Amino acid sequence: MASLLFSPLTIKRITLKNRIVVSPMCQYSSVDGFATDWHLVHLGSRAVGGAGLIISEATAVSPEGRISPDDLGIYRDEHIDKLKQITTFIKQQGSVAGIQLAHAGRKASTNAAWKGRGQVPKDQGGWQTLSASAVPFNQADEAPLEMSQSDINQLITDFAKATERALQAGFEVIELHAAHGYLIHQFLSPLSNHRNDNYGGSFENRIRLLLEIIEEVQKVWPSDLPLIVRISATDWAENGWNPEQSVELSKILRDKGVDIIDVSTGGLVPHTKIPIGPLYQVPFAAQVKKEANISTGAVGLITTSEQAEGILQNGEADLIFLAREVLRNPYFPINAAAELHDDIAWPVQYERAKL
Image (cartoon, helix red, strand yellow):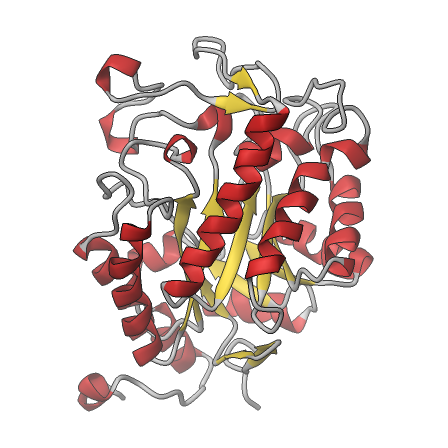
């Protein structure tokens, strides 16, 4: 019997050849937001490796939305050409190209991972950060500015314009990043959102920004192309965003036309105690899928074909998002198919190595 991992999945007019998704992973290899040959080879090799959907790293909708000065962006029309080259190559391999649109909020203007932790000083290329409230991520950080209504309006416009550019660049899936403590998540959680206007306080107010972004994105994004939202199902912190709120939000997103919830956790506040281990986030994807009646993606320390297949067989998720494992092994799908006794097509250039 064929595996579920290598069964196709149709979402609107897009059919994924399998359930393996290359999760967005920051590469810190851009200058002024431009993609480079590194991105072409990095993403392209995962397409050669056989993943059904390949999602670019968190791609900033504005310069100040970048996590670091080295982040990928889609805030200028000039960014489109290189991204188009990348999506064209991905499609040539039979994979689908997706993009994660993001704004880092108070976690912006930080150093790339290998350049040292902490904020980048303004005199060294850093910038003033923005957030739901003037609450820094770390106590040592310069506090972000609380966003005004004008700032919020501009942010929504930036997401819509980034969506237009993504479509021109050939992406066929969009994921909105509302997780990992970045700006949208900062509005969702009461730990970072202390506002007393229409964007703060109640659950309905805290989710308002995300819903307004989705509404504007959907005016641009074709209704027959998939829309994914990544959430952190829990802050792993007392009085923070929690699984029950994630389920309620997911029900609303389902009714708004979102196709898949990519379920991760954490990232909003430092120094949390997270029980990290194999498949530790899968139960959250299963809960959202069951209780909100929406398709989900599972992510987090999924490292083997057996684990991935088991998640699907158990009905815990519909897609398997892989990150570190496909950094270690771009050809995970090809190897997993052999382990699950599935006969999948290889790139013709590699067929002579097929066992």
